[in-house]
Image 1 (cartoon, rainbow, N blue to C red):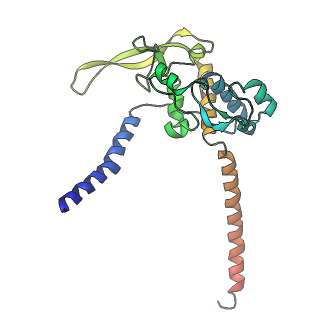
Image 2 (cartoon, rainbow, N blue to C red):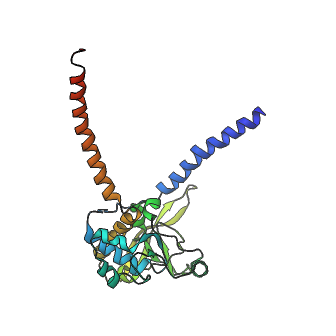
Image 3 (tube, helix red, strand yellow):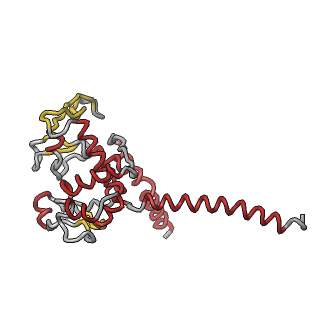
Length: 251
């Protein structure tokens, strides 16, 4: 009985300490770039929302986000209806897609995930790097692969903006001392509608919007938090002098 109990404890230790460390090491092996997030830049958020709805919402849903919340980033209801309301009937609807999950699984191998909280799940830096790391790979069913997400099922939906990138390889030694080829960087082989700098800026806007969409009330929460902190600081001063007044005869 004691042996079984010790085995159970060891299994718990493995679950809580060893396995998370292994997953963390796996994520750390991917070098990511810093995403220039600024949720106070409404113009960036509006450009990102337009990119999201035009390029991402055809396959990916955002079922926890309503079109009407775009008013929080400076858009009017009329602007939302005229320019962004393509897959819904009214601004109060959620951002869902018409593609059925069975169709998506048949085409891509798995249903595209909901993107409402993708930056909270993966991290804004990861998403920013991922969207700038697609390259041509004829061995893949979609014709595309990704440096950050090897053998990714998703095609490069933004390729008309970025153009076509090709990998440039370098030789390095593996753990057994044998030479192997790894991707050193990506080179532009066919230009798109945007220059590399413009594309990086567009992806920054898109990720900025995805980050905001994950928690639209983030700015309001911080604002309320600051008010509460200032109130408590002011009340602490009042409480100190009240206490001093009440206890002056005792001391």
